[in-house]
Image 1 (cartoon, rainbow, N blue to C red):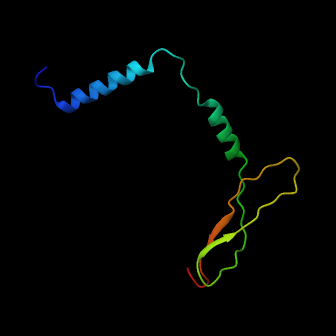
Image 2 (cartoon, rainbow, N blue to C red):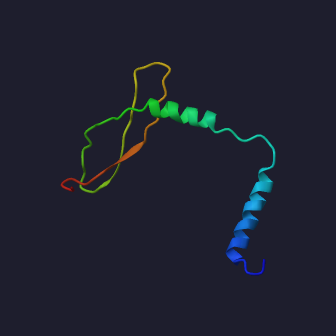
Amino acid sequence: MKNQSPLVSARDSVLSTTACLLGTSQLVSFKPHLDNFQKMLGNQYYVVFQAVPKKKSGLQRVKVDTELPNSELLAPDNVWVPAAGAK
């Protein structure tokens, strides 16, 4: 086809190459990863605390702890606190 656009030709070339590379091997499953992610989302808690602002805005260290045995907490080490009087 002489009147075919170079872009269409390039697109068709990429699509056919991709189809060949996929082959007939078994597909990769994202289910274990998505299940783990769903579990993490289902166990999230919203924590509110009062930070003491300083003269300058900046990161302040925080420590989050639990009294529950055999539990793991994922929390940031620092939080951004605006300067005193800043809105």
